[in-house]
View 1 (cartoon, helix red, strand yellow):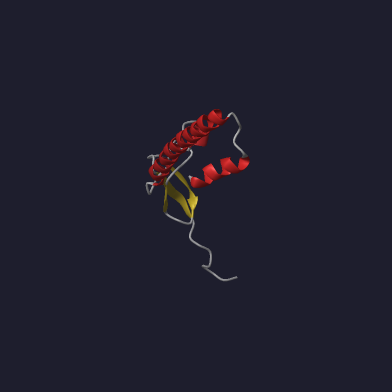
View 2 (cartoon, helix red, strand yellow):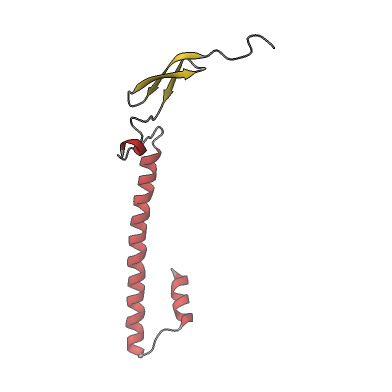
Length: 108
């Protein structure tokens, strides 16, 4: 067998979490930095926590808010068009045909 091919084993490897929690374990590295540990992980604590290193959460929340606003605008436009169709057809006393409905949606 070859000598010295196994990595060095540190029996006092210090693991440090972003929350400030530290503990000692066995590893091939002298120290380890982690973003989340059992002291701050939502599964273990039961509390919701966002781990964001690059601003991704704020970016996602901003997109979700913009999407909700767009949905509200499109819903109001749809209701407005439906109201116009109903007003036009009430004067005629007939229901709009499928072709007429498709034409009005294609124009938008």
